[in-house]
Image 1 (cartoon, rainbow, N blue to C red):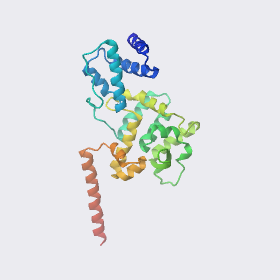
Image 2 (cartoon, rainbow, N blue to C red):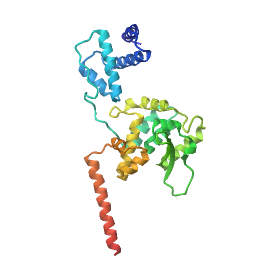
Image 3 (tube, rainbow, N blue to C red):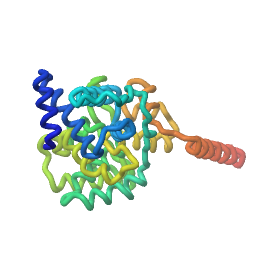
Length: 283
């Protein structure tokens, strides 16, 4: 560990900070010093922008820097306020990018990529949260053959907030991966034998290869939400698929621009004209 960080930790211990606080503050400063050689307002704002900032995380960063500056007697730097600093716009990709860019990277990075791939495929095509992936059982995933022409398969997950199950569907390519993985690894702690933290570690391993995206488990839920909405154009249906209690939450996951709106409108009106033409031809 860097001697600066060790000295900083000793300073905080001498000031009787909680052990958890000491670890968190030291880790923040250590991450910063891995990226920058000096403390400047420009560097600190850039560092903020690289984090997955919620209000609590932003406040934690500011407290860590404030404590370090007090230790080092730095008084000429103004720290950005929570929510006030410049942030990169949230970027979200589509299913095609996931399959053409993310999946090949997993194949290259991991000696045994199948388990990682099937988990990410399952997440991006169901919108399940890491906690749901960690607790779902194979009995809740229906991949039994229904008919020769079946195109979608289903899974049900228990939602603690509503004490109900929600059912979602996924395509055959995901079903095929599930069958292959299930045939190679027996179920122990759950369908995928992995914790939510373990899922997070997959993203930690690959995210540096995709600097344009804040690659984390929640991002795949954004991808699922956007792709399903573009396909269905039905916000209420998306709310049900995601299991959101409030439709406002569903809206927060959508990243729709003018081109998306134009394309959806064109599709709707093209279908409307086709329906009207079909009706006239049957008269």
